[in-house]
Each structure stands twice: as structure tokens, then as C-alpha cells.
Length: 619
Ligand code: ADP
Ligand code: ZN
Image (cartoon, rainbow, N blue to C red; front, top):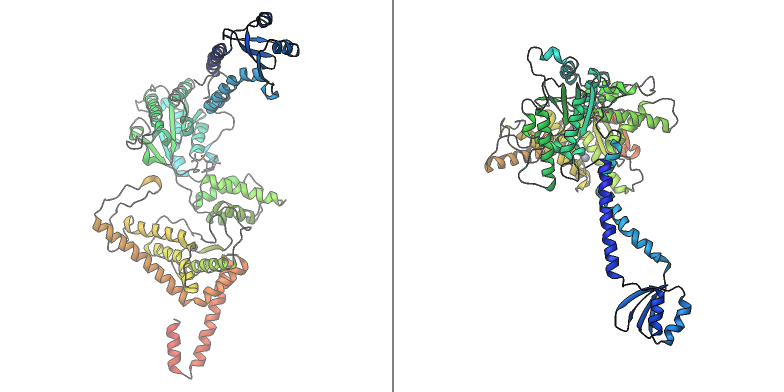
């Protein structure tokens, strides 16, 4: 169906039918034509009853009541004759907009063409972009990607090295009758380099790379996805050994859900079946390896994961601190960086960034530097780029009332102070009251190292820090705002997992209970189902955990009330503070407190009781 010639034939057929239909319509509606002479004859014999003039076109009825039409060469000359013979005359002028006949003839063509274009927009573009010898699936050549271009995910690379060997040297492995794997499933978040890895495998083994993506499968016409899959495999088999990459395989390979069957489900199933048939259909001498990528392995149809299909699964994680540094190095090599640029610090400050986001970060930083005509890219440019990516663009222009600014400053100071006063937690990185994206302000912490496991203390402290914002508002203003909704959501998430997933609650114990909601990589439905009673005690436990943390935050902020005010004032003044500035404010506060303690101790020698009390209040 996608072949342009076939489309042309379709178009022609439809047009022909339309033209024929239009002609029939015209014949039905236009009265039988007479020559002008015949008409004049009838007129002079008083055989004409009425005429209707439309420009030079005349229609009318004769004395027998039969309709007729004719063309009038000279209307001015005819009119007196018509009057003489007492014919009823009606008529209308020809409007310029009605250069009508042409329009009427063209109209169906225009409609057909328009309809056709709308219907086949996707197919059309793909039909013509494929072009050439009629195939869309030509292997990618040119820029060869190798493992050197993929940084920071060494484990995955090592596992895939084997696939490279298979592709390079299939005989070596099949010699003893072993079956070469057919399919590898790469699972991981978007932007972690799955596509890049697949390309690198093809590059390392010097084989052709064919790719098809989830969105290719979603077509308007039934059967297109399936035929596309067959076409792809036919093409790939012509150039073995080769590698076929299927991106977003969950688009077609999602589990066949009984409930929500939509129209596109049939289409999806057909495509999936075609894929399974093709996969099973390789002969053993055909060295075709398939790599599929997904970030939702949990929803894949089990049929896809059976032995002989995508039976190898490799998880591509988000890069850790070392991985991020490696990826940064790859991309920093491509730009001009300042000699004192410390990539290590940058790598630490971007936990959770994917490879794609790091590539984007470096690019944004380079653009920032270029914007200000700098000679090279400096740390500040990275900082700006990072903020832009993490928090969305600064919204300096937004009008924030003085009251809102104050509340935000105390809110953020609350987070920061609770964080400073607790031991086991991440150091503060940056704190700002400049609105960004949807947030009014932000307090950022960096992890010293990517933590893989978290202690109970760390998690509880995190909840306390999250509560710090709301607690500060309550301590200082005595009223609550909606600004803490995000914090509360986050804290609830941590507390819930702490109880249901990590088994850290003494009352519930180390049992994984099913939670509601859906986590990434779909661990939602795992865990033990439970009774209403357990559900209640889970809820109570979560409530107590968060309540305890909130109380702790309140206590800390009341105890360090002066610090809270100083911190908030500093924030209102500077708007954004980094770790160093926070440290200065903190040390200033500590010094003040020390001074005060000394003063009260000295002054207190006169009054023992008073001194005693004071030292108890300030431990
Ligand atoms: P995915 O297929 O997992 O969504 P991609 O492979 O399309 O991710 O990654 C997008 C881009 O991000 C790549 O083209 C590359 O520029 C960059 N990238 C991602 N991961 C890495 C990595 N580990 N090393 C180098 N570049 C990476
Ligand atoms: Zn907050």
C-alpha cells in the first residue's frame, strides 16, 4: 500500500469515478439544450412561457411546460423580442466569484486530493522518503559508532561483547552445534544509550544495522505494521550477517490486555505476530541478531521473552558518578573547555542524569559560553545549563509578591536548616528562591557518592528535611501554604516504601506488602497482598513516621529559631546561595551562639540557678 505507484493508481481510479459521477449529476440537472435558432423559432411562434437568464445562459419552459436551455449570443438584442411576446423574464447577474464552471469542475478534485492527503500524510511521507528501489530499510552506513563512543556502562558493554563475537565469527560458535542467540532485550530508562549501544555493536562487528521503531508500527491502515516487519526482515536477510534494532518494542509487544481493547489493539497484535513469525523463521545459517529496547519490560508479552526470542535481557542503568564522569569526558572532548574546569564536581552534582541528558548538558553549556562570546566553556556555563535542565528556565519575570517571597525564603531555609542539623544526610548544594518551572524555590542536595543502599536513619532524615519547609512556615507564620505539596508527596513516597518495600518499620516487619500506585519498571503489582487489618496498620505506621519527622523538624527549627531568621534574611538578600555561602551563614550563627554561651556563663557566676537553666536549654 505504501508504494507510490500504487497510490497513484488509486488516486486515478478515484478521480475517474468522481468525474463520471459529476457528469451524470450535470446531465440530470441541466435541461435538454436547444439551438438558439430553434429557440427563436419557438419564441416568434409564441411557444415560450418563461425564461430565466443567468448571464448568457438561458433556461425556461415552453408552452407545453417542457424545460429547455440554450445559449444566448446577444442578450440585449433578445430582450425586446421576449417583451414583445409577453414571456415572463427572470434572471440574475453573473458574480465574479462564480468563475463558476471551472470551480465546479475542480471542486471534486480538490476535495479528493485534500482527503487523500489527510488520510495518507504519514504513508505519503514514508513512501517518498523511502524512495529509491522501493525499500525503506537500507542499512545505516557512514558514521560508524563503536564501543568507544559509549561511556560509563561497562558491564553492559562487556555482556554485549559476546554478541559482537557472534556476529563477527558465527562459524566459530555454531561449529559444535551451539545455537547462536537471536535476540537481546535492552531495558532501561530513556536516554541511557540503548540505541547507541545497538549501533555500536553493529559498528564493532562491521555488520549492517537495520532499525525500526515503535512509532513506525503505529499506522492508520490495518496491516501496515505487519507488512513493514516482513519487509524489514526480507531486507535484512539479504545482507547477513546483520543486526536488527527494534526501538520501543513495548509499543507492539505490550501484554495483550483483556480489558482495554481499543481499535489499535488488533493492529498491534498483527504486528507482534508477524514479528514472532519472522523471528522463529530464521534458519540457523542466517546470522541475524535482533536487539530490542524498552523502558517497560514489565508490560512485555511473555511470548516475546521465550527461549529463542528475546531470551537475553540486559539492564542498562542510569550512570553512577564514575559513569557520568566518563560520559562527561566523552562529550567535553568535543568542546573547548576552560583548563580549570572540574568535570568531577559536575559529575557529582548531576545525580540521576541519563547519558542523553549529559550530552545535552554539555551542549547547553557550550551554547551558553558562545552566547556571551567567551573563548571557552567554564564551570559557570555548566551551572547555568544544569539549572536550566533540572529546573526549567528561570522565571525572573514572574511577579512574586513580597509576602510570597518571604514565605518561600523561610520555607527553603527550613529545609536547609533541618538538613544542616542532621548528621546522616547529603550535603547542601544550592538553595534558591528564584521561581523555576513550577517551583517557587528549591533546595538541592548532592550525594557524596551514589548511594545504592540507604540506611533507615538516612531515609528518616530525608523525610524530616522534606518536612522542614512546611515546619518553618508553621513556626514563623503560624499558617500553612500550598507550597509544600511536592515535599509532602515525596515524603509520603519515601515513608510508604520504607514500610511496604524495605521492611524498616518495627511494627510491620520485613515483609514486602503490595502498594498501590505504580513504580518505575513496574514493580507495582509485586509484593504480598494483604488484609484490611494490615492495610490499616500500614497506614497508621506511615502516618506516625511522617508525624514524627514533622515534629523533629519543628523542634529543630524552634531550637534554632534565630538561625532560621538569619538564613531567610540572607536568602531574601542573595536569592541564590551555594554551599559556601550557606557555610558562612552557618558559621556566623555558631559563633554567635558560642559568644552568647560564654556571656551567659560569665554573667551567670552571680546567679548559679540561672546559669544552670541556661546550659540546659542550650546543650
Ligand atoms: P535510548 O535509546 O536508551 O533512549 P539513546 O541511545 O538514543 O538512548 O541515547 C541518546 C543519546 O544520548 C545518544 O545518541 C548519545 O549521544 C547520548 N548517550 C546516551 N548514553 C550514552 C553513553 N553511555 N555514552 C555516551 N553517550 C550517551
Ligand atoms: Zn519545599
